[in-house]
Length: 264
Image 1 (cartoon, rainbow, N blue to C red):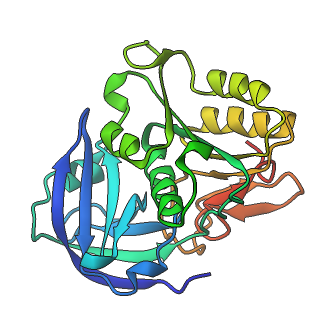
Image 2: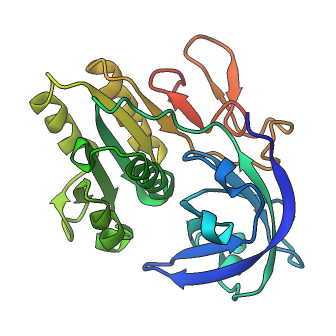
């Protein structure tokens, strides 16, 4: 596991995306290249009445600036305060934390399954793969949301050259329905290919993606979301049951788990 660092840093750039989603670029930070897709940070905004830190997946890194990006949606008091931050404001972060994704073989076709705020770590994984010479046409990025406003960074995804499959529940953008429905169709159509599955999003979506992996014997990894008061495995606030018995801490043994490893 990568050794983590706790330090104050600054908001280098803030951008409102859409539908109460924001991007924050934080830096300067040491050893930024130690941050890998799947890792997360534990963030604290100083001088607020929010007691506990919050965990956020790393969305990208910028080695030339020694900076990293997180993407979040305003859903409560902490994220509401984060949305008021300005360039130059100080935050404290513990980073990098957790277990990262394992890259696929270049001979495999990757199926990315993103839902809602599960988009950032898979975007990071996709861009990371592009920098390492993967063929973008071997990556199918399925991205689901309730409405068009929940499908973020479309132009950014398209610039990678990967095959983008947007799905919205109301049909306002892309195909209408749940994101896992076209994925099963894709798996059946490409059943002779070597496939690998990556997923991050709401629990129901992760359960459906996990079941598809098991049903069609497709290896892959899921990035779980859970409350993480400590972020380092001490408080046991994020434990999940394992299919082999026992429990794992999402913040320490995860957040990335193998398909079929966790009871969902």
